[in-house]
Length: 428
Image (cartoon, rainbow, N blue to C red; front, side):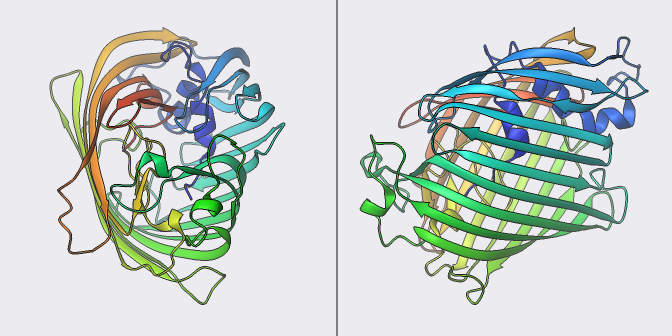
């Protein structure tokens, strides 16, 4: 089951192809803004926010499987005595095509460049509700250790499952309601700024079944024996060894990031069955001129043991995000479109800065990013990962609060229907 992020809620405030994306711009800008308080050219912001600012932002959520959600986010921004934004309140009122009226409360706090926390709670008239809290320390990797804690309750009514395999068909599409309680803890040892070894423990209690969308069959009526349907408890642990030479964690323009990972879920803990996985992920960035960066990304994930692993813990492709050790992007398809034991994914995109302007004391840069994603899932570890690839191509529209990622709208086209995603941070 895909890990949901509090920051992802902010990204849904994008509207009119990023024309109103002020909130994610300022939200993403804070961790490093607190440290530098400067533009990329070294100068201080000429017009910092001195008083709390109120900004009403139209909200459009266009994720492929969720239907169109419309709303309004009345954002309140507060700043510290140095003129740096250190607090964001962003409640909203929305209307979902599937689940009626709803409301959310969002609070984001940036005490320093090295720490941040967030709290999000939401409820809709029907089916969906959630609470998401996260705390991170050691973001700059300047000390010996970095830490994070993430607690989640989520009940979602738009889950999709198409069956296993690289050639799963659209006519095998099913839906489900999923309810999950999750707790994730991370402890990372920073040997140098570039070299980090992280341990991640993730405990989840999940219930999958039934349906909220009457135009699709329920997963338990079509795939009743599929592991992961019903009630599952598990404790997943993984280690990730990272070598990162990028010039920024947030808006990199050059360098590389290698990540080797291995994980397992023991069969004797909880009600899930044991499984293991290993893999490698690489992101490389090369500047091509003063206003463009060419980015490549590739990921391999293999499962040496997988007997009766829940379907959401298998290797999967789809959606707009790369998760180290987990899901990989295929931006013409919804989350988890292709699922099987092993996976390969490769992507390339060119990020072109086309315009720069100032808004609410922040320098914003508009980027265009044509992209190509490709990948496949496969059952046997000896299969050729480079054949029978699914391909997605499209265009990304991004706003960057230099030197911070702000928000994006990515529009992808592939072998099925077009898909539109919005959020914050680059996909990889």
